[in-house]
Image 1: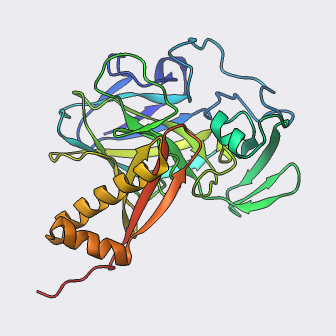
Image 2: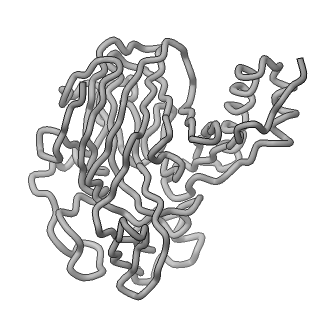
Length: 313
């Protein structure tokens, strides 16, 4: 079955919460097609390149809607704690406009770059899906690579949880590999999984170094859900050409070691290796990337390309 969810008050929120009434209940194998506003809840392209310019969604709750605009929660029948929810991204299409900025970002990030006292640098972007190009109001031209910034499940503790940090159940991953053709595996901590999605991005480099991606409304997101009766600790991503594991921590080094530990465990499972043998192989064929340094909780992801490991029988 395919369920359609439009971006309207009853289907959107700005937080994670496993006690919130689900916007829809779906079965294992069902798909959801939705659209959702950008992370800042813009109703259209800002008329001038400036934070706060333009029109925004009205009727936000000060606490529940304090974060990114998300579709959810989606309740998956049969998903139980200890399971894994596999979510395949069939399509991820942004609107024909977006924005990016340096400023109004993580305070530590701005302090380290000595830009805390500077005015923001804000760009409006026009996006052409046929040419896959985006052009800024200042004439910059880039090639787009749309992806989902926020994709995750509710933590097991009932109540409001911020959309801004990444967690072991997903959330604000800001990983550019979470795109059409990929499948994200998320650990289920509460019955029904309670899935959320939003924060469209047209383009971002690893690290999200300036503070944002090209932030966009998502005109169409097409997802298919499947329950896997296995337990994982952190998100795992399957792209069209690689396996990806994640680590999160306020300390970037700790995040890197967590991503490595998760990758070594995955290699051990895939190739029947001990942890040490998997580490030996990871040292040769796995690359670690800084996912983002701007969400308070830093992210690192480790990439194992397909075909990188072969072992004689």
